[in-house]
Length: 184
Figure 1 (spheres, rainbow, N blue to C red):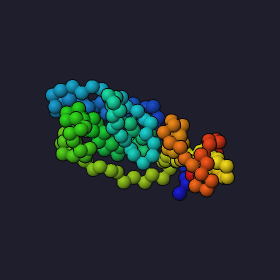
Figure 2 (cartoon, one colour):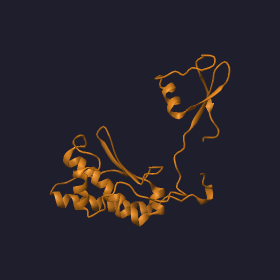
Figure 3 (cartoon, rainbow, N blue to C red):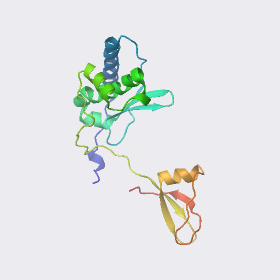
Figure 4 (cartoon, rainbow, N blue to C red):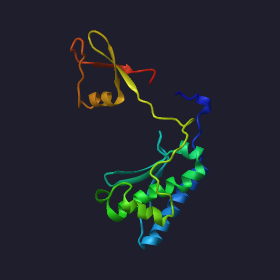
């Protein structure tokens, strides 16, 4: 169901972002006090989109906590009390035990959540009306007999030369034309 552009929730402002960062750092300080060891400050981004309120991400050696500024705007107080400790607990349990050795919401993570005196539920049940969600992009391709639409995932595979797609009718290799004007 599409939401009118005028009814979309605006993301949190800079002051609210600062409050979220402060709460993240305060929660991390609580873990430092409880475990008697320092934890490196972790970057906090407000670039998450879609249905998730927060995410702890590890890529290589880079660790970051990402928050969804639109969901925080709609449920600010609730997310300060639930999402922030939830994501910090992922970071702390990673630092203490290593991601390879624990389940994402396993016993170690639950123990860290208990230190924070936070609800250890894994998901929230929010009404997401007005929250912008990620939409699949499509790209126009052609063969000898017709037009085709490839998803961004398939288009990127073609662009990286990891895959080639052929028409089921004529068997000809598909050639890129342009991004589609409307994504559905």
